[in-house]
Amino acid sequence: KAGVTQTPRYLIKTRGQQVTLSCSPISGHRSVSWYQQTPGQGLQFLFEYFSETQRNKGNFPGRFSGRQFSNSRSEMNVSTLELGDSALYLCASSYADTKQYFGPGTRLTVT
Amino acid sequence: KNEVEQSPQNLTAQEGEFITINCSYSVGISALHWLQQHPGGGIVSLFMLSSGKKKHGRLIATINIQEKHSSLHITASHPRDSAVYICAVRGETSGSRLTFGEGTQLTVNP
Image 1 (tube, one colour):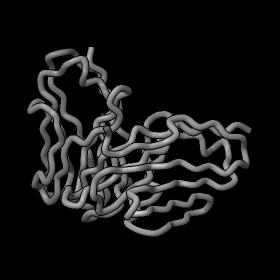
Image 2: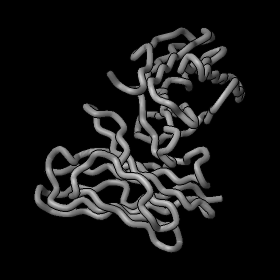
Image 3: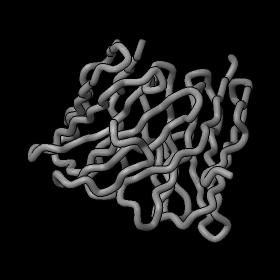
């Protein structure tokens, strides 16, 4: 089985712009979670989608949003980028609430 | 106080040594994960535990639900074990949402 894939792997954006990141889960996995990792805050939960519905949301501003498609692929969007949004964004997929499989991450740099 | 606390934050060992990383948490959980992150960012899930003990190769993970504590042991450590090890918990009613410890940076010298 192919692993979790994320695109793009690296991204440089300017403050004020918006960005969309994509995550393709392992085939058959219906849960996709998104996480942000920064040196200062560590790993933090953004949101989780299960069967196209947002099941959980972390403590992030409304500029962070996401969605899941019928094929379980998920996207997250960050609008009005700030310097502090520079981070590694990881998605993870799982079958129900079992072990999570992480993608390689998208490294976003905001200048 | 963080919901998930790990110790130590940094650990340096010589090849062959037995290593223990500890994780304490303060909330009710449905499962605890041990993750490994190498430089470059990729995260690998090592174990998911809800009770007892699991073993995979040289790695052993244990959990004591009553004491809200888990340990990750590495036997016969090797330089390729050098990585950040992260403890994460899944709450009782939080779906797949994980809350993470700060991680333990392990360096194994040859």
